[in-house]
Image (cartoon, rainbow, N blue to C red; front, side, top):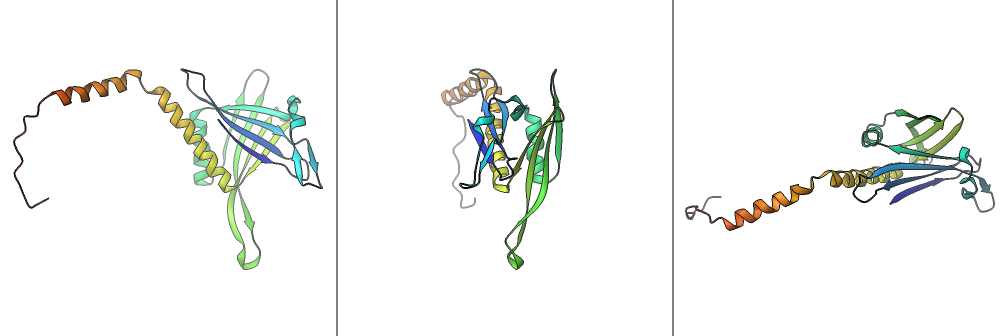
Length: 188
């Protein structure tokens, strides 16, 4: 399952992100984010194209987030604070940042100010992916992360736990009650 956000722009600096939950049978789910940089802009149609960038390694990036990093992202959204971290491996050093910024829409007395977020990823100091996120997109991402948490928690339930609970209910159903009859009362 995935959640995709496309943000092309006329400067041809846009980005698309696909948030994905992957799970192998019997294993815990994994949360990934895949980025692809905008390739071109059609000024007549006011649309951007991304597909031509998919085979260029400098135009794509993949990240894997753990459950605690995802919690930090949710906290950043809720508290409107910056969350930054980095991932390293043998060949890549990637910095990750969620930053709140103020936006407004409308004019004059009808201007409404609100907080949006910038999600930026920089790999090896040169390959940068920037995804501006509106409040509704942040809310939807939080719901998607919560789906991941639900799947993760389900995989961590001991297999015998449900059987033990069922067994206790079956035993109680077979055991006769020894309670005294209840007296009638007008009080609750």
